[in-house]
Length: 104
Image 1: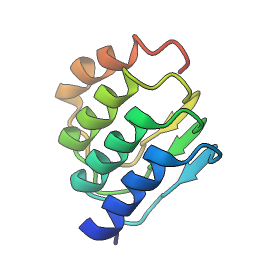
Image 2: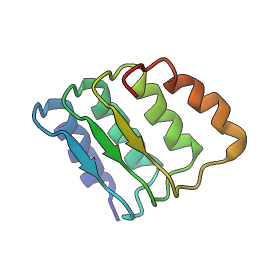
Image 3: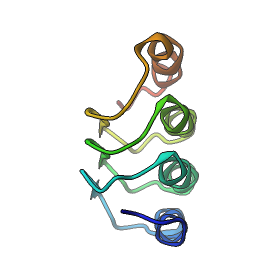
Image 4: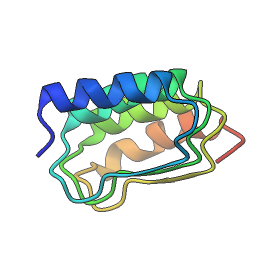
């Protein structure tokens, strides 16, 4: 499981890394806190092309952080977060955020 310290390091790494193009962190029990940290890193990252955070413990709260970050990130072309604990009632609101990212 990613703890808060590891999540913060991941955020810092995403913020300053200019060569990473794929990040796959599936099935590691990543939480909403981890999603929020990834989102913070995505805002600053311009090299990541593919992000897969499937099969974790991310809820609609964490997903909302990711989708808000996608509004400011134009490098990502592939994104998956299937198999998380998302509430379908909130998905239309969340997906409308990502529709303004034309690279996805």
